Image (cartoon, rainbow, N blue to C red; front, side, top):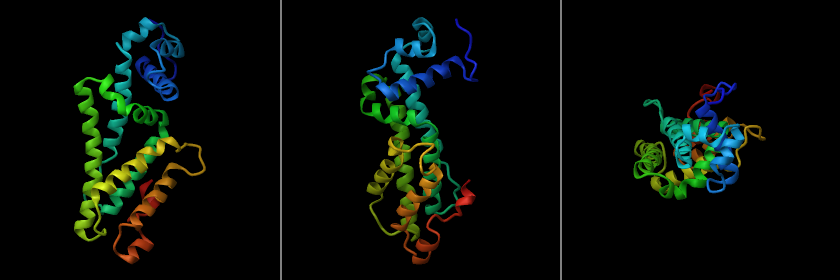
Length: 215
């Protein structure tokens, strides 16, 4: 067994980080366990000590991405619907910007997970995806019911919102022209100005919260 890494990560965490970068760049199919072993400076037998198969590495990547998204859902129950959508958007974009490769792997391989994962593993990922969709739909429905939002098809809007935010891994860059929090303000403002019924609120305070308070 080789010496542990000096970057503060456990050996398993280092393997996962290296594999994530390789899968993002080459795809799951295009990456061999030998490639992971070479990149981390271990022999393949040692890699198999930590991960018995390549699919287990992929599942850990997808599980991490799914868990992050679900954890970002948590809201203050006293917040308005527009505040919930803005704060969720901000947490999502900041988290995606912090680990672009993880998002890339998740979405690149998502159509094929039934080939690589067990039924239980697939169910875990699908449950997380359903939780995110239902949360966004329910927040929109809450805003409609309270009169805060115009009536709309919350199912369609929730799906569009998820595609808009989670798909940002394709172009969102930590060192880009706009930061993730700034982009969250742009996204949320555009979306909420199309939903909010009250003209004064829609113009003056569509986010429902001062941007500085979200820091």
